[in-house]
Length: 144
Image (cartoon, rainbow, N blue to C red; front, side, top):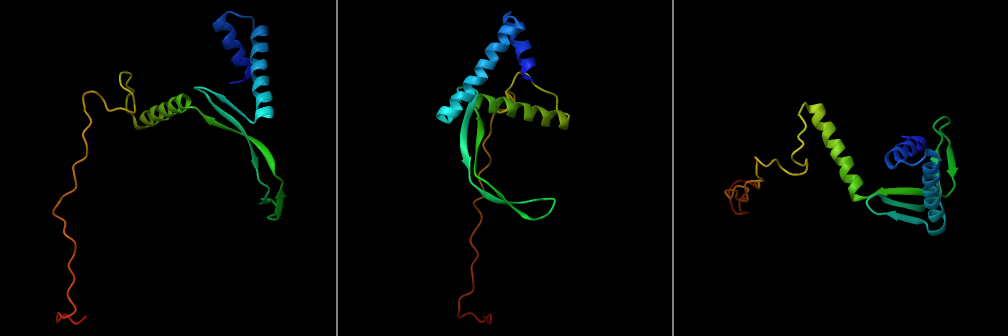
């Protein structure tokens, strides 16, 4: 999805002009960038955390020549998604796995919880009949 598509979707949903919506979206992005430059971190609840981190200098390999190349230290922006985003992406992943396995989607139950018709059952305890092995004593005639 592009910024233009975001602007169009928001303007249609809120009944604003695309020009005004574009200005709002751009100012939001500019504010995020300015905050990262000034503070190095911005946390957007239910969305995620953008953070500026310094990547150390390192030696890399040029894949074409095979020779070593010095890569200087630099600042990079990292993003850690929030819990809500992680959960929605996980749901998407599980739905894809079910689709590939040919399992029909269910809308009533969450993929993280068992279906209501099958209550959760804890696994059976391990058998208690196991005994540690015994070893012959040093005075046995086995020849050890």
